[in-house]
Amino acid sequence: MTAAATSTPRIAIVTGAGTGIGRSAALALLGDGWTVALAGRRPEPLDTVADESGAGARAFAVPTDVSNPASVRALFAAVVERFGRVDLLFNNAGTGNPPGLMEDWTPEQWKGVVDINLNGMFYCLQQAFRTMKAQSRRGGRIINNGSISATTPRPNSAAYTATKHAVEGLTKTASLDGRKYDIAVGQIDVGNAMTAMGGRMASGVPQANGEIAVEPVMDVDIVGRSVLYMASLPLEANVMYHTVMATKMPFAGRG
Image (cartoon, rainbow, N blue to C red; front, side, top):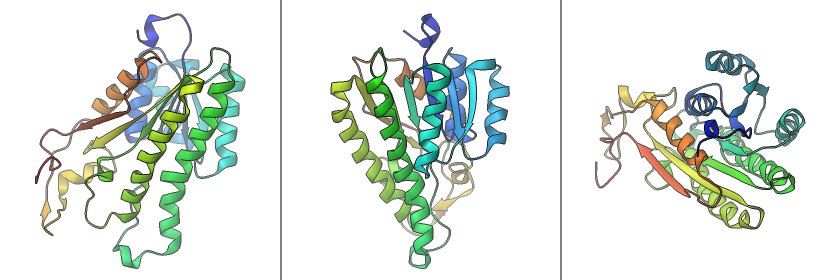
């Protein structure tokens, strides 16, 4: 049963909601009748998504820096104050690798990726646990945005790949720890969606053999529909790992 098919309001938080995968997932959820808190560092893209959705008061923009634990606490507090609960967290906010070669990165560049992709994801997951286990009609669902890079990395992607390996560990342990609170935790791994981050594949990216090659990409709204599917399941069921990718991208086997 989808959110649109029930009269009980369903409340979601989507981080990184202003662009890319977060935007697509937020619009898919809003289109299905969910109430969605749109979280992101820049308020203007969040307001644009809210306006585009036509969802009115069901779209709630909350400027948030996930790398700042106080900002994450304020996000969850604002949502609970306004809507009374949180049923879904799409833990999506992330960033790519620093420019240039790994050996030239500064410690600050490395930490910048870790602070968003790993620490930020933990801060959001932690606040979701605190909220979901304490609310009346206990429980909820958390979907972490991982990456196929965790198993099949690209050249010169140490920061992004290392954090996405860690996300897989967060997903598995949180899935275990959430059972006693009726919290279902899963992960979506995306390959070559047409976004600002993934769209560069269409113009050519380095391959393992050193060549530059154009790779197939897919419509980002396919990812939004995948998130909606995972979110629509009853809490007795969980998709722990969901991979959605451009069919012909070099991932399986040797290309």
